[in-house]
Length: 273
Image 1 (cartoon, rainbow, N blue to C red):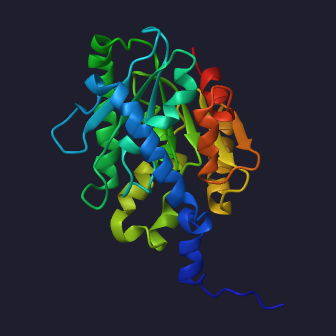
Image 2 (image 1 turned 180 degrees about the vertical axis):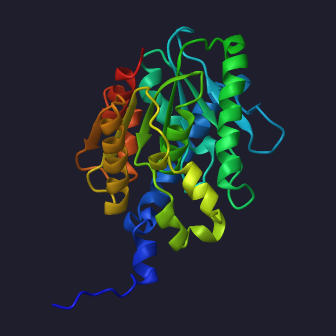
């Protein structure tokens, strides 16, 4: 029997990572979240847009919780490192805020203005700033990082930061190599060195709790990323569960982070030291 060794068509390589194409309703979803987030940000006006650097997007929105000693969720937004902003996602802090947690949402410079190495560095800068300055704003508890999609990658990279105690990767990208052959690389411009150094799957596992979750109706490539990352950590003895969310796609999974009893809220609460 002949084996087909023909290359995968470009359209199929692109579609494998095109979450917006797979779930067209994301436009309406994000519009709704942005409107609600504007209202939430208005209630915390004094701790919005706190600069951790000099670039336009190097700012943090901080939502102090009821208990200064409670954990602080540090959430990195997604958008394939090239779109969206922290201001759109204030709604995602509602779940843990109902349990007294604080929430911090750092922004970062987007590709292609910044390389992926620079973006990862900015996230580390944001964590440095929070460790030094958040207590002055009534946020003194342990920091737990989380991120969705590209933010899941950033959360995995941030897990090694000294101020971070645990993390949650939501529908994350943990191996970068396939992206270099897709439409995404027009803006990412990934170098071979970045792929090797910044793919969490290629780095020694961080021995802190890191829960990995994905929607059961995700694109197969995203599901495979989560399974591979969890398997690698499991082989190394690194702690953290693999948590598929039934009936959720790449976007609706985040609804379970908004509810005080949602699946992602429960996963975050379980990570508290």
